Amino acid sequence: MMATSIAYRSHSARLNDQVSLSGRASSAYNGRKIPLGSPVQRPTNRTHKHRSITLTRATTESKDEEKPKKPAMAKKNAYAHWLANQPEELPSGEMLFTPPTDKELRSTSMKLFLQPLWKQIRWGSVLGVEVGSALSDSINTSPFSPDVTLPQLCSCLKKAAHDPRISGVYLKITPIGCGWAKLDELRRHIAYFRQSGKFCMAYMEVASEKEFYVAAACEEIYVPPSAYLSLRGVSVSGTFLRGVLEKVGVEPQIQRIGKYKSAGDQLGRDNMSKAQREVLTAIMESVYGNLTRQLAEDRSQSEGERTAEDVAGLLDEA
Image 1 (tube, one colour):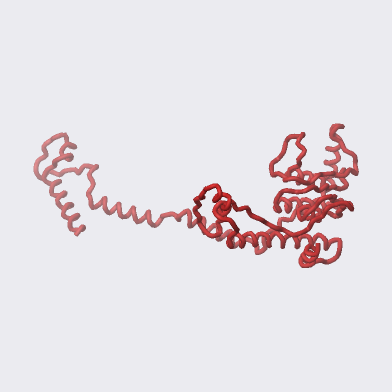
Image 2 (tube, helix red, strand yellow; image 1 turned 90 degrees about the vertical axis):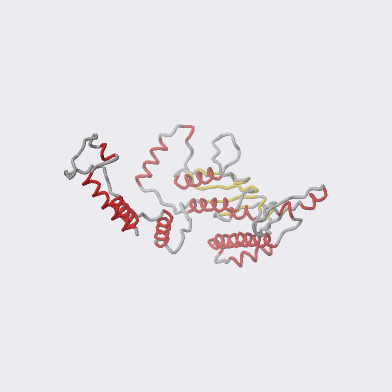
């Protein structure tokens, strides 16, 4: 039906061109009269509808053929290609110490020789650091602050490993109040320092699992006879205020998304839910398993072969 209509309009347009011009076509000739049957030159700005329709369809088809891929599909293919080229084993995160070359040693000796007198230290010195408190992640730039942050401590251990004037490190461990992830980062840098061949010793007077976990990464541990050492494993507890709120006449309104979203249980319950207990138990098992495994590896280097089960038995007896 569309093709018939287009052919009819095209035929009508040819007849009008042979007889006379009207409308905008006539205005193109400035109103001049043209004799009947005279050849007429068609205006250049006139276009038939059937031609425009054909061109439009062809343009649309070419756009469909050259249509680019969606960004989401391209990202998905790139991720699949990246995942296929990844090694089967993930990186362990261990830091490997590279001994300095002769050129680097000469350069370091020249820099130390040109240092001011108030910055020079004696050869064979021991770096003493007090490890304790929260071990903040921020970089403390104040020289008057007594607390040592984790970035400062890690930087000192790396520089001491390459400084020829430092012969060893002495760590005085006090009660630690940070998480286990920061302790793992500190242990990585202690292991990096020990790869340089210099000694590393720890001293503590009051210690629990976290303090002993850091001290076990050192080569030697010194504890005075009056020290207090408490190794009872890991534990977690929760505080629930529903009973207190009922006594003062407060009714909390909490919206839950899932059973494992236990942020509102502190106000909405008076005991620990099964889902929250399941989550906390899984976290404690992971932390305790990593603790016993790392302690077994550290003590095996100086006391013979030990397994995580042996360390867990010693902790149970303590």
